[in-house]
Length: 171
Image 1 (cartoon, helix red, strand yellow):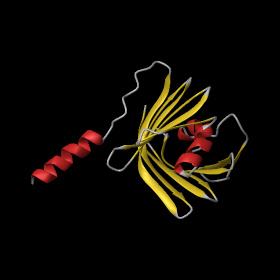
Image 2 (cartoon, rainbow, N blue to C red):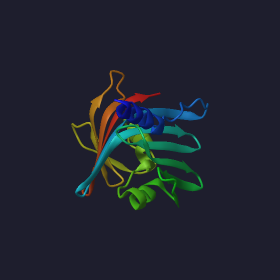
Image 3 (cartoon, rainbow, N blue to C red):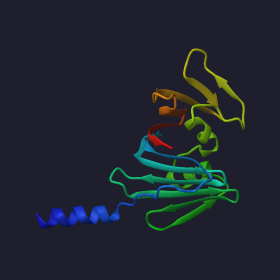
């Protein structure tokens, strides 16, 4: 019994909850779940994303709440820190996550896709009669929406990868 109690306390101590954003330049503060299938591998866990006018801060968390990767992006580039305290840098988040995690997180454009619309930064093609469009080589599909119309379940697909985002909260 003591071992189970110790294990529960230890795991709770290892879990990190990202802080709530109180910054006035925060455009949205999103929490949810993420599932990624790439090749014959996958990742699933939680996602926390604070999107600000000057950049982004993301946490990818394991199913038990431990930080797998902490990603920051600003005009100078992107930094990914892992749970074992290694730090990686690149010009963009997509290339960085592909190099370090093995899969591409399309942060460029995702801020618009999360809000239910194509990014104004590049051309897109709507799929007639569907809650779906194509942009930057991705097929973006909205499978479920909140009552206010904002996306709840978003699927991003390319031939080599499928990312499913389930939004719990988007403020």
